[in-house]
Picture 1: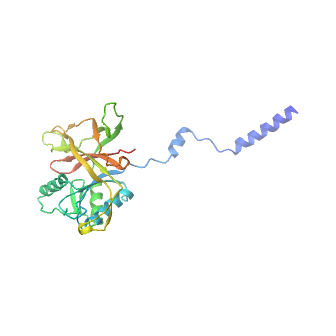
Picture 2: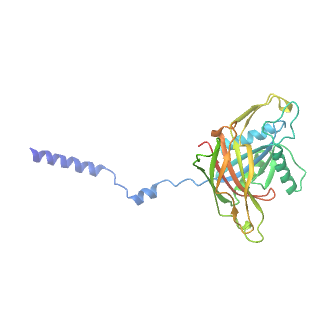
Length: 279
C-alpha cells in the first residue's frame, strides 16, 4: 500500500514538472527585462512676467502646462518665473515681483544689444529669448536647447545638524563634466547660481489691468543668488554643501532647488540640476 502511494505520488510530481515552464537563467531574465527609460534632458525655461501685464496670464498658462505635463519627449522643463515690478501700480502690486528680477532681465537685453524688455518673455537655457504669447516658438526653442550637451549637476538633501537654524535645508552639490569651452586660458567666465522656486501657486488679481483674473503659477522664484564660479582652468569653485534658509511663508512640499552654471554675463546655460525639497 505504501509502495503504491509512493508510486502514484511520483507520477503526479513527474507530470507537474513536465507541464511547468522552463526556469530562465539569470542571464536570460536580465536580457528580457525592459530597458530603463533614458533620463530626460533638463532645459532651463525662464519666464519674465508680471501680474499687472495683460498678456502675462497667457505666458503663465504655457509655463504651468509645460511644468505639469512635461509634453516634450526626452526633455524635462525646469521652470523659473521671475516676476518683475515695472507693471506695478497703486491699485495692484505683484506680490512675487522684485527689482533684482528686473535687473536680470536687463542683463539679457544688454548682452543681445536689444532694447526689448517685455512680459511675458521666455529665455531658454540663457541663450534664446522668445515671446511668451507663442507656445510654438517656446517649444521650438526648448527642443533646440535640449540638443546641446550640458554638464551634470547632482543635488541631494543632506541630514541637518543640531545647531542648524529653523527652516533650513542642507543641499549636497556635485558637478561633473565641465564643458571644454570653460577650460584653458581662453575659457569664458561662468558663474554658479542657485534658485528656490515654488509651484502650485494661485492668485486672484484684485486690481490693475488684470483685475478679476485668476492665475495659476509655477516655478515662482522665491530667491536666487550666486554660490560659486568656474575659473579659467575650468575648475568649478563652489560649496559642496549649502545651507539654504527657507521663508516660513513658502510651502516646503512645493519647493524646488535649482542649481545651474551660466556664462557671464547672462549667457548660455552649461549645466543644470534640481532637487525637490519636499521629498
